[in-house]
Length: 142
Image (cartoon, rainbow, N blue to C red):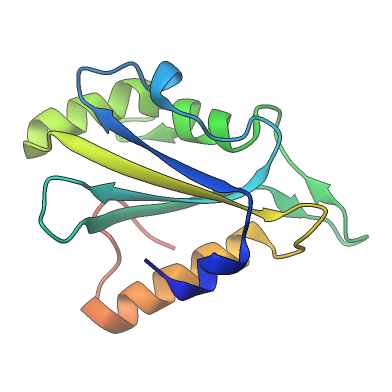
């Protein structure tokens, strides 16, 4: 886990198996903006395979976010063949023989914190790059 994330008190996590319904498994905030980290939970030391975020800070300091918040970004955000994760994650998990994902989410911009979601996403990706020399395998580019 990344110590930079400990300051974000509005957070939670859930696990997801390929045969699960992501819409039901996901417990992420439907109003909040922030980041989510996806781990392959099959490995002894969970392998970080993706970092994502939602929410954009405007020049007046307000947050512009899509309706549905982190929940919608996780469940319906497009990945792998431009289809929603509720469909693409199970298919990709079967391809890669991953039994279970662990998804951790954090609200980074709310009444208590004003950290741009993309900044925190970039920070975590940079740390991963520094440690491994590459991005998580489900992050195509940043």
